[in-house]
Amino acid sequence: QAETAGGKAPAAASEIAARAASEPSAWITIDQFKAADLRVGVILQAEAIPNSQKLLRLVVDIGEHRQVVAGIAQTHRPDDLVGKQVVLVVNLKPTKLMGVESRGMVLAVRDGAGLALLTPERSVVPGGQVS
Image (tube, rainbow, N blue to C red; front, side, top):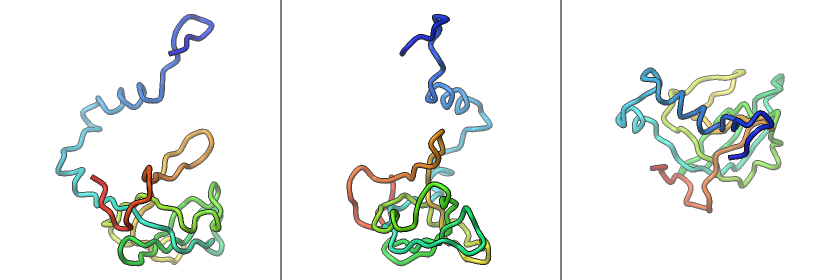
């Protein structure tokens, strides 16, 4: 790891995450983790939601077509998303955002450049369960 001018190495993001995860309040059991049904889906349609600067309406193939509302409009253009594989939580209770029903959540990582969608390292069958 590179040292700073003061001679100390900067804290890496992984070290910060490891410290946060070591706190007992951050721990979950394996059964709690397994409760989340994570699947790979292919985005078939993406469009802006009227009167929202942050939300996009996606239609995703997870072995069935599923509508998902994602707060990614500020970092992703709808046309660039079509055909992209993403990881979703598919067993969240449906909810309405800006009047549009969402039946899942697209997973992403936020960093200094915005949001990066979680994707498999190679193309996989839509609906494939993350394990």
